[in-house]
Image (cartoon, rainbow, N blue to C red; front, side, top):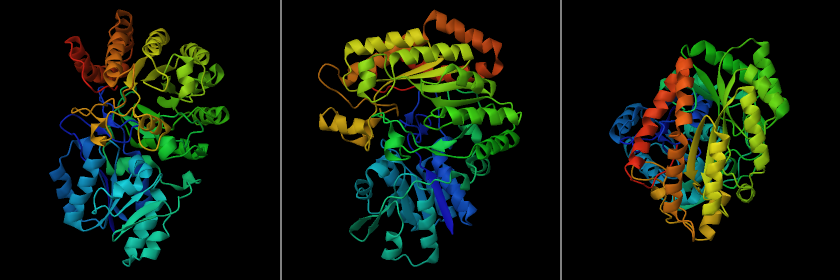
Length: 497
């Protein structure tokens, strides 16, 4: 049985729409994420004997017609379509068009249908079902049912994690327990190598080309804005074995000949010091020499960072969010300003670069706390930084807060992006409007990146390392276009890194 896994086309005229990132958009730096979750599911189905095809339309800037032509040629019995909140209307339309030409089963996946399954199904009768949260085994069970040829109501109702349509009625099955044995899944990098082109993906803060992996799933923290733990992966940590992770690293080093870096997309790789230590020690024990980056919180101690640096750590992507303690508390960050300062001091001593993320417009935010955050960012002086207004998505506490307080400027998800595909601020409240938040982010970015001391540091960094120069040049060219627009006095809705 043929199964199509599709990252559908969207806004290709403006760049590569990055659907799987935590705030989906076309990015100013050119950052573009792997369709990692689609690839995990596709790998599992292929392992179980299904004939699969992956189309990552944004990666190749494919049009609707090109995708429809490929879908018609492949003629899948099941199409699995990735989605996001700002692209959901587009994604549903794609499903309807593919349904018309293939008459196959249409399944939507991702954070948005996980949060709003019934609402998503009601958007178009051509959508047969949505898979909620992590969906590899939901898709496997559904494919097995479809393969038997007799799709009974009873058979569909037995698939945990599925919300489906039967006639005019919608059925909401039990939640699927999160997978514990992640080692049983195929290496996602094997799927990358076979089905997509790894040269299509780029992280502005990392060396190119890059491969994205995960060492575990879930996040124990409860930040009100964070999308994936609240709608997709949950808060319970589930780890791959260290051996399994490092085996995949070895696979990548052998099979991606020009690979320059590996990015670990765990919500926070460093949350467990014991495991982070074991991870580094296994890399060193095997004598592997490679550069890697990872998501981290600003609470890793110096001893751990020194060991991780020895094992190849080059950069941590860190959500700092605010320089005001009351704002950190309001977003349930569970982090102290003093600890962030110490973290940056330790990172410099360990020799690990930091990409700092600053998120403004949180509960309690004022113009004064915005300025505190900018001053904090300039003093911390991370290697790179991004400033953007809080993006609220269905299924998160932040979205509920904004909706209940009537802070949303719109409830049309198409307006979550600007006409150019950039993040569009949709929160406005007394004393701090959406336009003021966007203007602040534009000015903060401009002030951060146009400092003579920063430019000089980047020039030295690039000239001393050809790989760094390649990374910096690729990101800087895209970012500079937006900074030049600001210099011309054009503040536009749309604010992201």
